[in-house]
Structure formats: structure tokens, C-alpha cells
Amino acid sequence: MHKCNICGKEMNTVEDINLKGFVIHGWRCECGNEHSDPRDVDNIVKYFKALKKGVEATVYKSGNSISIRLPKVIADLYHLNSNFKLPIETEPGGIRLKIVKQKAEA
Ligand SMILES: [Zn+2]
Image 1: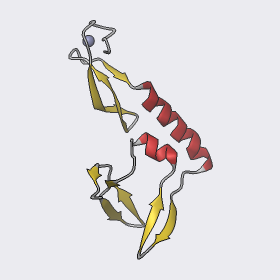
Image 2: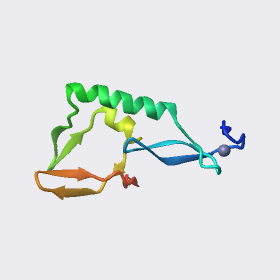
Image 3: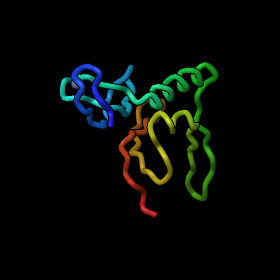
Image 4: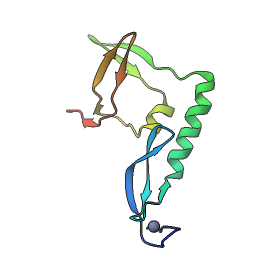
């Protein structure tokens, strides 16, 4: 239960709050009021702290393919855990992982 501090109604749990360009979890009231999940706000703060040292992926050989290890700060930021397939888009000079969660086949 999460009550709105403006109208007092019960707020709905949502996963699409836009905070500084990050899509995070939280609560939204029918009056339009939004509360961000403090754990997700904390993840954003941790990410910006990590940026000062540099946030990097590590590439490993894995059979005939390679594995890309993402740091915990990124996994937490995007609520990633194991066994998701993320679509890859290529762009000049790099790739972009889309955070569209599709369960990988076991
Ligand atoms: Zn409200």
C-alpha cells in the first residue's frame, strides 16, 4: 500500500516513471502524483558515482561466441538478472543493448 500525499488515495505500482532519462519503478496516483521507488533513485546515484571511475563491460570468450559481463551498477539500474535476451542494435562505432526483457530459452 502506498498512499498519495496529495489526495490520500491509494497509488498504483508502476514501472515507467521517467527520472532524469532513466525509467524506474514507483507509484502513480490517478491525480497524477508520482513517487519514485527510493531503491531505484539510489541505483541512479550509485551509477553516477561509478561513472567517475568509468563503467565498463568486460568481454570473455565463451565457446564459439563471446560473453559480455555488465557491471552490477548497470544490472541494478535496469533490473536485469540472468536469462534475459536483449536485442542488439548496431550503430556507428558500437552496439546498443535494448532493455526489452525477453526470457531466454533454457
Ligand atoms: Zn493523488
